Every structure is written in structure tokens, then in C-alpha cells.
Length: 76
Image 1 (cartoon, one colour):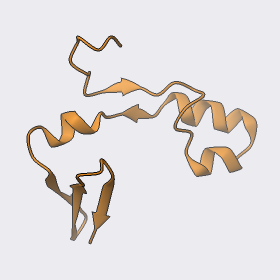
Image 2 (cartoon, rainbow, N blue to C red):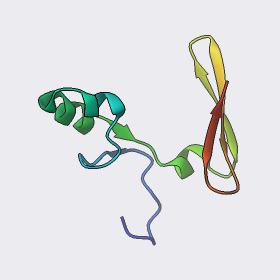
Image 3 (tube, rainbow, N blue to C red):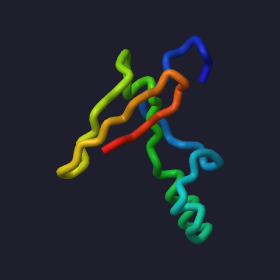
Image 4 (spheres, helix red, strand yellow):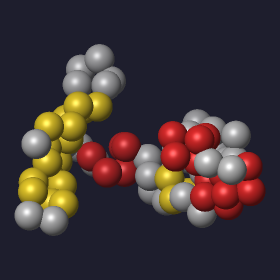
């Protein structure tokens, strides 16, 4: 992705990056299929111009904050 194009909000995760913990611990054949099926979201697409967003998960609500130092903090 070049720096002059806006990021896509939904991409497929490359097999070598962002491998989930469960996939790393699983058998190799499961690891490859689980990683290739994951969707990847760009945080800038999620947040837009905001620094916080709310995520409903079942009966719970979580707050995802983007800090000034660029870190993400998820709280219940």
C-alpha cells in the first residue's frame, strides 16, 4: 500500500504477520488456514476523526481508546 492512497478498511492478513496465539499453538495445517481466513481492519478506518469508540459484545459494552502515544486501550 503506497502512502498516498487511503488505507483499505478491510484487508486479508498476510500469513507471516498478525498470527493469533491460538494459531501459533495449533497444528501447522490449522495455523495456515486460520491465519488466511482472518480479516484485518485498519484502526484509522475504525476511529475516523474520533479518539474513542464503543464496542457492544453480547450484553457488555467496551470502550476502545486511541492514546496520544498511538496505543490502543480496551476497557470494559
